[in-house]
Length: 473
Ligand code: ADP
Image (cartoon, rainbow, N blue to C red; front, side):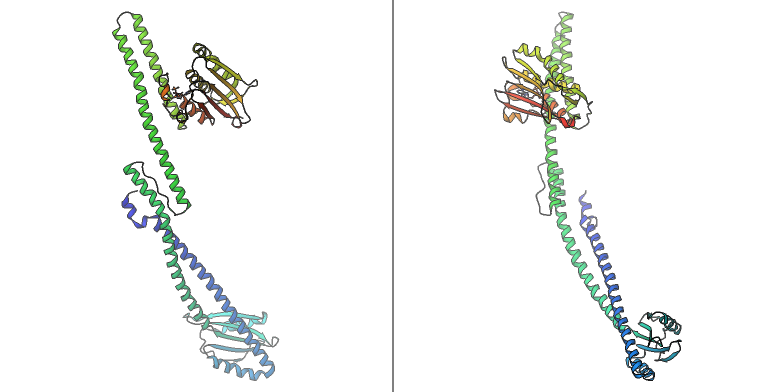
């Protein structure tokens, strides 16, 4: 990410999130406003309807107590009292003929035909309520039409609901103000919260840029933006540790490879030169070339081992897993090394379970693992020492154990013997490349097995390969 791009404020996550958040917040507030307004409006209409109904009941009562003439009078007087354009009253007979009506001349948008229809409807239902709106949308009225005096008359009352409109207008204004204030507060708080969170991301970016510029010495500092950012920073730092470790390993391996290849190549060159200078006989040429071929084979073996470790560690190597009888395989390995042990005056013993132990594995590699461990044990054990090789079984694992009474390894070196090319200083005079144990570890790990080592200087070492039985079904 270039710094130029970063400076464009509308491309930042903080601004984008704030815009989304503000839009969502605003929509929610508008939805709340619409719903609450419609609830308020319908409640107000309900109250008006109740009042209209109560008024029709009073008219009914007056009609029964004071007679029709008195009612006709109050139809005019009540309308005049409230304002002719604000209220109207009509009384009809049961066959819908008008008995009395207040002046309707100011009710231009009230159609006679509608009044007739509502009157007709009210003879069938108890009460009919309707809302009428003037054509300029300026005034709104609520009308009730209902039968009174046990169906002898139909009474119609209409009233402008101006208070209702004023109340709703005021509600609109108040709610509008509240929306704007809530939006401003919400967006400001949201922006600050998002910005604070983004500080952590920014710290990681700055660290990454510094690493790109100065190298792997930098790490992301701890912050207090929250668990997710802390986890991200920790994961990032762990990744950096790993990359730094790998790079160091690559450097070490490159140095070691250069060093370890130089020795055999120098040796090959030396043999070739000697052979060329030795003009005595064809036989001496032959012997010289035999040594060169041997050295070349060793070199190729070394390179192949390095490649196999790299491929296995990278998960690129696929092994042929077959069912193997472990006791037999270990015993064959032991038999192969008997002559070497005899030559060196070491007592080599095999101990194997009477019952077979079956495991899944790659036969040539398992054989090489046993050979590597036995080769080391015999290499680092002196005359009259002993080596015990075992194939056994515990509840969880099948195990191969190689125990020697050799030089042993101190605790500092013990942590490093599985590294590529690592050799304990004191054993540098013995033949070897320092790749045997790292190859074993690499194969064992890729198979889902493990290798343990216990060692005490001058007492001896025990290497144990553990093959979990539950993965062997
Ligand atoms: P190499 O044997 O070719 O040197 P390895 O990777 O097999 O390489 O072993 C690495 C080092 O670990 C050896 O050089 C030796 O110092 C030490 N080591 C391995 N096995 C034993 C053992 N059985 N006893 C003592 N030291 C050992």
